[in-house]
Length: 431
Image (cartoon, rainbow, N blue to C red; front, side):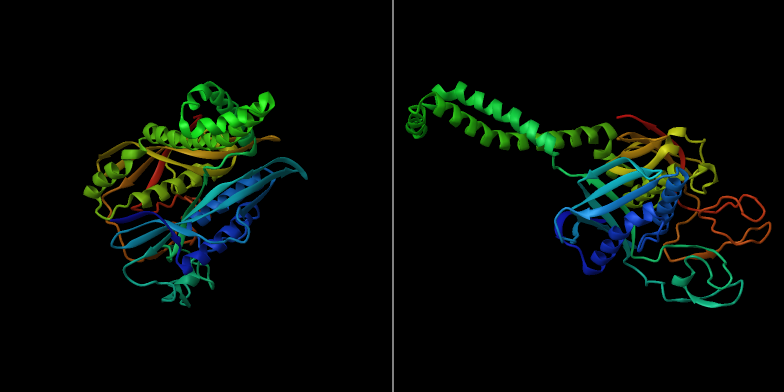
């Protein structure tokens, strides 16, 4: 698999337009339930579930993605990877989020996050795009393009299990930037300035022994105590500013390294890919990661996770039911991997930024979410585009089996045969 990381170059024009429309529509999709353009099936479904959770809580959620640099709507390609079938590009934009929660017309929470946006755009590199191919509905005989059948036959409503019509946006994240808040800057700068001023007076006798500095320092000190004090403050403020930012960035980098070690992320990718490709040569770690995050969100936002076709575990803790916004925070670790009786089991730990509401109180927390995923290995992966008509074997009703485990007509469970990952366990703990 070819990979390319950290290329800060403008993203291709077609992807730029898709990411622009996606980010400008994201807030209304979450808060208002409006359609989201260019999102894949999993992402679209997840955003629908999130909006339903917001309605269920009886709140209004204003969510806006804004650009921190005025009129700069550019996205940059910072990473890409491809195999024989798919190519994924990561688009980066300098953005932020305005969030406001209202209940009974009263604002009960608001924040402004200066986070950077990362969007994943997936496309095919082999075969053609199936959007405009014709398909005859087996139920009513009407002819439509495959693109028109994504939400079911427009004439009779027959539903299909269909692969995504690529290119699509398969995931997005808002990562905390390296910036600091005004409070952090003012407090940190003041402390560093005092430290630098004191350090200057401690080192002053030694600085006088440096020929290039002694003459200038003597001129300053001849002006008396006031001159010395002003000079010390100015010097402390100047060097304190640079010291603050140096320590701030050093702390961010150190925290990231500690997180990588704690989560096992540093070795996850290569170890996981090496073992999985012995079972499935087309395996992609990036695809798994995106799928895993989507499955976590689906289970968290679901009204009843046990009715979701992608969740096969015990009932979730009540604290998951209070979440109204869930954002992956940038550290995804592999804890355990096993394969037995045709089932691959993977345990992961990830950092998330979570906005929860209980009663009239809203909390912003940063927990670790543990998740266990499984995938069957006895079903060959079909890398060509596929679509299958969904029909209940008991009553014949056609419905969206990607969203419903049980037939709405007769209530019987519909087992959707899949070679994809399912979520079997989910828990949450504080950092």
